[in-house]
Image (tube, rainbow, N blue to C red; front, side):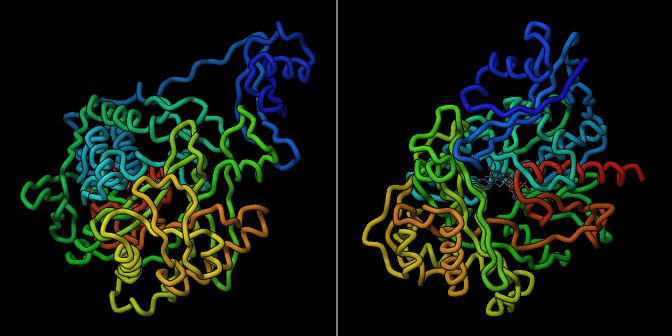
Length: 519
Ligand SMILES: Cc1cc2nc3c(=O)[nH]c(=O)nc-3n(C[C@H](O)[C@H](O)[C@H](O)COP(=O)(O)OP(=O)(O)OC[C@H]3O[C@@H](n4cnc5c(N)ncnc54)[C@H](O)[C@@H]3O)c2cc1C
C-alpha cells in the first residue's frame, strides 16, 4: 500500500530521516516500524512566515517497496553505422539533442568551436587572472556550452515545452545528485557540472556518436535550398541528413554567416542591464528573518520584477552564495554573469537586474537591420570596456550612488575576481536603460526591505540574457522557415532560456529531425 502525504518540518527536522519517518507514521496513523520506505516526491522551502519551514510531499510505502526505475540510457542503441546528423554546438541543446538522436537510432556528429571541459579551465583562468579572452574558449564557448561553468540552476518555467523529468533524469544518470528530481529549485553547481558534462560526452561516444572540439564551423553547405552539411575551419566538409544549429546566444559569427548566405534571420528583443551583488548574509536576513542562517537552510534567493513605463525590469539568473564572472566572448568587451558552486557558500548573492529592450527602443541602431539588437548589445559592452583599463576589470557603483547618479568613492567587497573599478554607470549605460534600472531598483527596495543598500554593488554589463537574433523555424516541423534540413535549436535560435529549456528544446528538435529523416 502507498500513501501520499504532505508535511511541514523545521529545517533541522527535514534533514533528519528519523524525524521524517516519525511524522509520516503519525500522519498515516501507523507504527514507524510498519513503514517500509518513505520517498520524497517534492521538497520546497516556505519562508513566508516568521520561521522558515521545509515543505515535503512524501510517498509512504507500507508492506511494499518502490520499484526501481529503469535507466534511460540502458535503452539506447548503438548508432555507429546509422544515418548521420550534424550538430553544431556542444551546449545543453546540442548534447541533449545528441542523446535523443541516439535513443531514436540516429548518429550525432557534434562540432564545437571550444575545448573539452577540462582544457577549457585554463582559458577561464586566463580571463579571470590576466583579462585575456579567447574567442573560442571562454565562459560561453566550449564543451557543455554556457551551462558548464554556470550557476547550474535547473529550474525552468517552460513546463509546456517538453519533458522536464526526462532531462533531469538524464542529468542524474550522468552523475547529478538525485535530489534535483524532487527539489522545487534544483541546482547542480560549477564544481560538479564539468564531470557530468564529460560523462554525457562519454555516453554519446560509447553509443557511436562523434564529438569534435576545436572545430569552428565557418560555413554551411546549402544546395537547392537544402542544408547538406557544414565546413569546419574553412576547409573540412562534413555532410549529414540534417543540421541542428545549437550555437547559443553569443555566436555572432554564425548570425553573420546566416545573413551572408541569405538564410532568413530576424532581430529579437532581449534584456540588458547590470549585475547586482549583495552580501549573502544580508539577503538571508531579509528572506529568512534570521540573524544567522540555519545550517540546514540553503543560501537564500529572491526574484523581483516590476513595470517601469512600458517596460519590464526584473531580476534574472539569481546566484545565491555565488560569484560574478567575466563572460565576454571577444576581446574589447565587458560582459558579466553569475555562477556558483554546489554548496553555494560564497559570501555574496548576485543577480542580473535587467530592462526589457524592444526594437522600438533601438531606433539609433535600426540601420543594422537584422542586427539591430546585436549591434546595440555590442556597443554597450564595448563602451563599458573602453571606460576601463583594457582588461576584464568591470565598472561598479554602490547601489545607492547608482540611483543618486554619482560615482562611488569606494566599493564594497565583491566576488568578481578580475576586480571592480569605480565608474559612473549612470553615464555609461544608455540613458533609457539607466532611467528604468534606477526606478526598478528603488521599487525592488520597497518590495524587499533592505535590498536597496549602499552595501550592494551594481556591476556592468549584464547583456547576454537571451539571443539578440531569432532564427525562425516552423512550429510543427522545427525546421527553418526556408531552408530544408536546417534545424535551429536552443537559446541561440531564440527557443530556450536556460539549461533545462535548452536541453528540452534539443530533445524536441531531435525528434523532429527523426521524423524528417524517415521521409
Ligand atoms: C555564467 C553563466 C551562468 C549561467 N547560469 C545558468 C543557470 O544557473 N541556470 C540556467 O538555466 N542557465 C544558466 N545560464 C544560461 C545557460 O547556460 C544557457 O541558457 C544554455 O547554456 C543555452 O544552451 P545552448 O546549448 O542553447 O547554447 P550554449 O550553451 O551557449 O552552447 C552553444 C555552444 O555552441 C558552440 N558554438 C558557437 N558557435 C560555434 C561555431 N561557429 N562552431 C562550432 N561551435 C560553436 C559554443 O562553443 C557552445 O559550446 C548561464 C549562462 C552563463 C554564461
